[in-house]
Length: 177
Image 1 (cartoon, rainbow, N blue to C red):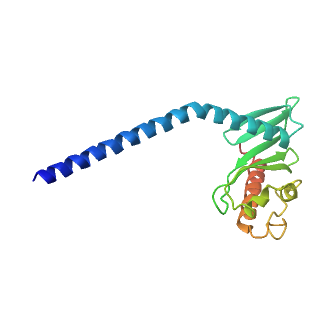
Image 2 (cartoon, rainbow, N blue to C red; image 1 turned 30 degrees about the vertical axis):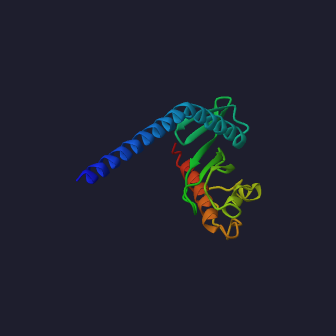
Image 3 (spheres, rainbow, N blue to C red; image 1 turned 45 degrees about the horizontal axis):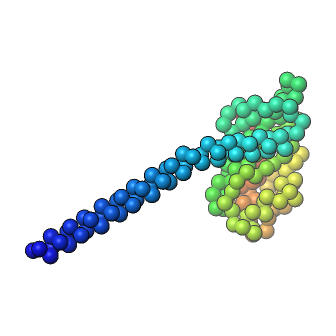
Protein backbone atom coordinates (compact mmCIF):
# COMPACT_ATOMS: atom_id res chain seq x y z
CA UNK A 1 0.00 0.00 0.00
CA UNK A 2 2.87 2.34 0.75
CA UNK A 3 4.26 1.73 -2.75
CA UNK A 4 0.99 2.80 -4.36
CA UNK A 5 0.91 5.96 -2.25
CA UNK A 6 4.54 6.65 -3.11
CA UNK A 7 3.84 6.16 -6.85
CA UNK A 8 0.80 8.45 -6.68
CA UNK A 9 2.84 11.16 -4.96
CA UNK A 10 5.57 10.78 -7.58
CA UNK A 11 3.02 11.18 -10.40
CA UNK A 12 1.51 14.24 -8.76
CA UNK A 13 4.95 15.78 -8.25
CA UNK A 14 5.90 15.15 -11.91
CA UNK A 15 2.51 16.48 -13.09
CA UNK A 16 2.94 19.64 -11.02
CA UNK A 17 6.49 20.07 -12.33
CA UNK A 18 5.28 19.76 -15.97
CA UNK A 19 2.46 22.21 -15.25
CA UNK A 20 4.88 24.80 -13.85
CA UNK A 21 7.29 24.40 -16.78
CA UNK A 22 4.40 24.73 -19.26
CA UNK A 23 3.02 27.80 -17.49
CA UNK A 24 6.45 29.50 -17.49
CA UNK A 25 6.96 28.70 -21.19
CA UNK A 26 3.48 30.03 -22.06
CA UNK A 27 4.15 33.19 -20.05
CA UNK A 28 7.45 33.77 -21.81
CA UNK A 29 5.87 33.21 -25.21
CA UNK A 30 3.07 35.66 -24.37
CA UNK A 31 5.64 38.22 -23.22
CA UNK A 32 7.64 37.91 -26.43
CA UNK A 33 4.42 38.32 -28.43
CA UNK A 34 3.45 41.47 -26.51
CA UNK A 35 6.88 42.99 -27.17
CA UNK A 36 7.14 42.04 -30.86
CA UNK A 37 3.51 42.40 -32.06
CA UNK A 38 3.57 46.22 -32.40
CA UNK A 39 6.90 46.08 -34.26
CA UNK A 40 5.62 43.39 -36.62
CA UNK A 41 2.42 45.36 -37.23
CA UNK A 42 4.35 48.57 -37.95
CA UNK A 43 6.68 46.72 -40.33
CA UNK A 44 3.72 45.20 -42.20
CA UNK A 45 2.04 48.62 -42.48
CA UNK A 46 5.28 50.09 -43.88
CA UNK A 47 5.56 47.27 -46.44
CA UNK A 48 1.92 47.84 -47.47
CA UNK A 49 2.51 51.59 -47.93
CA UNK A 50 5.56 50.88 -50.10
CA UNK A 51 3.58 48.37 -52.17
CA UNK A 52 0.73 50.86 -52.68
CA UNK A 53 3.17 53.49 -53.92
CA UNK A 54 4.88 50.95 -56.17
CA UNK A 55 1.58 49.80 -57.72
CA UNK A 56 0.07 53.28 -58.28
CA UNK A 57 3.12 55.57 -58.45
CA UNK A 58 1.13 58.53 -59.82
CA UNK A 59 -1.01 58.66 -56.66
CA UNK A 60 -0.10 61.41 -54.22
CA UNK A 61 -2.27 60.08 -51.40
CA UNK A 62 -3.91 56.81 -50.42
CA UNK A 63 -7.15 56.55 -48.51
CA UNK A 64 -7.97 53.22 -46.91
CA UNK A 65 -11.64 52.53 -47.73
CA UNK A 66 -11.85 49.13 -46.02
CA UNK A 67 -9.36 46.72 -44.48
CA UNK A 68 -8.67 45.42 -47.97
CA UNK A 69 -9.23 48.41 -50.30
CA UNK A 70 -7.31 51.64 -50.86
CA UNK A 71 -8.13 54.57 -53.12
CA UNK A 72 -5.23 56.35 -54.76
CA UNK A 73 -5.69 60.04 -55.54
CA UNK A 74 -3.86 62.78 -57.38
CA UNK A 75 -4.83 66.41 -56.93
CA UNK A 76 -8.00 65.34 -55.13
CA UNK A 77 -9.26 62.97 -57.85
CA UNK A 78 -9.26 59.21 -57.61
CA UNK A 79 -6.90 57.67 -60.16
CA UNK A 80 -7.35 54.06 -59.10
CA UNK A 81 -7.93 51.55 -56.37
CA UNK A 82 -5.87 48.78 -54.88
CA UNK A 83 -7.52 45.63 -53.62
CA UNK A 84 -6.10 43.02 -51.28
CA UNK A 85 -7.26 39.64 -52.52
CA UNK A 86 -6.71 36.30 -50.79
CA UNK A 87 -7.45 33.47 -53.24
CA UNK A 88 -6.67 29.92 -52.15
CA UNK A 89 -3.49 28.53 -53.68
CA UNK A 90 -2.06 25.03 -53.48
CA UNK A 91 -0.70 25.43 -49.93
CA UNK A 92 -3.08 28.06 -48.55
CA UNK A 93 -4.24 31.61 -49.19
CA UNK A 94 -2.12 33.93 -51.34
CA UNK A 95 -2.22 37.61 -50.36
CA UNK A 96 -2.20 39.69 -53.54
CA UNK A 97 -2.44 43.44 -54.06
CA UNK A 98 -4.08 44.33 -57.38
CA UNK A 99 -4.05 47.94 -58.59
CA UNK A 100 -6.82 48.99 -60.97
CA UNK A 101 -6.47 52.37 -62.67
CA UNK A 102 -9.44 54.62 -63.44
CA UNK A 103 -9.55 53.32 -67.05
CA UNK A 104 -10.56 49.96 -65.46
CA UNK A 105 -7.28 48.28 -66.35
CA UNK A 106 -4.78 46.46 -64.13
CA UNK A 107 -1.93 48.80 -63.29
CA UNK A 108 0.07 46.33 -61.23
CA UNK A 109 0.04 43.13 -59.20
CA UNK A 110 2.14 42.37 -56.13
CA UNK A 111 2.11 39.23 -54.03
CA UNK A 112 2.54 40.04 -50.36
CA UNK A 113 2.63 36.56 -48.87
CA UNK A 114 2.05 32.92 -49.67
CA UNK A 115 3.09 29.44 -48.59
CA UNK A 116 3.43 27.81 -52.01
CA UNK A 117 5.96 25.14 -52.91
CA UNK A 118 9.48 26.61 -53.18
CA UNK A 119 10.83 26.35 -56.71
CA UNK A 120 7.39 25.77 -58.25
CA UNK A 121 4.56 27.87 -56.82
CA UNK A 122 6.90 30.63 -55.76
CA UNK A 123 7.67 31.31 -59.43
CA UNK A 124 4.48 33.42 -59.53
CA UNK A 125 6.55 36.06 -57.71
CA UNK A 126 8.59 36.61 -60.87
CA UNK A 127 8.07 39.92 -62.68
CA UNK A 128 7.69 37.99 -65.94
CA UNK A 129 4.59 36.22 -64.60
CA UNK A 130 3.04 39.25 -62.86
CA UNK A 131 3.58 41.59 -65.85
CA UNK A 132 1.12 39.50 -67.89
CA UNK A 133 -1.78 41.04 -65.96
CA UNK A 134 -0.89 44.69 -66.59
CA UNK A 135 -3.32 46.33 -68.98
CA UNK A 136 -5.98 43.62 -68.60
CA UNK A 137 -9.56 44.78 -68.09
CA UNK A 138 -12.67 43.09 -66.78
CA UNK A 139 -13.64 42.33 -70.39
CA UNK A 140 -10.42 40.42 -71.06
CA UNK A 141 -10.27 36.69 -70.38
CA UNK A 142 -7.74 35.91 -67.67
CA UNK A 143 -7.35 32.15 -67.68
CA UNK A 144 -4.15 30.26 -66.93
CA UNK A 145 -2.76 28.22 -69.83
CA UNK A 146 -5.02 30.13 -72.26
CA UNK A 147 -4.60 33.88 -71.76
CA UNK A 148 -1.90 33.82 -69.10
CA UNK A 149 1.24 31.72 -69.32
CA UNK A 150 0.84 29.51 -66.25
CA UNK A 151 3.81 28.36 -64.24
CA UNK A 152 4.64 24.78 -65.22
CA UNK A 153 3.99 22.50 -62.26
CA UNK A 154 2.08 25.23 -60.40
CA UNK A 155 -1.23 25.46 -62.23
CA UNK A 156 -3.23 25.74 -59.01
CA UNK A 157 -1.09 28.67 -57.88
CA UNK A 158 -1.33 30.34 -61.29
CA UNK A 159 -5.10 29.85 -61.27
CA UNK A 160 -5.32 31.42 -57.79
CA UNK A 161 -3.46 34.56 -58.91
CA UNK A 162 -5.75 34.84 -61.95
CA UNK A 163 -8.76 34.47 -59.65
CA UNK A 164 -7.47 37.28 -57.41
CA UNK A 165 -6.96 39.62 -60.36
CA UNK A 166 -10.43 38.85 -61.75
CA UNK A 167 -11.99 39.47 -58.34
CA UNK A 168 -10.33 42.89 -58.06
CA UNK A 169 -11.49 43.84 -61.56
CA UNK A 170 -15.06 42.81 -60.70
CA UNK A 171 -15.00 44.85 -57.49
CA UNK A 172 -13.64 47.91 -59.30
CA UNK A 173 -16.22 47.70 -62.10
CA UNK A 174 -19.01 47.67 -59.50
CA UNK A 175 -17.11 50.25 -57.38
CA UNK A 176 -17.21 48.00 -54.37
CA UNK A 177 -14.84 49.20 -51.67
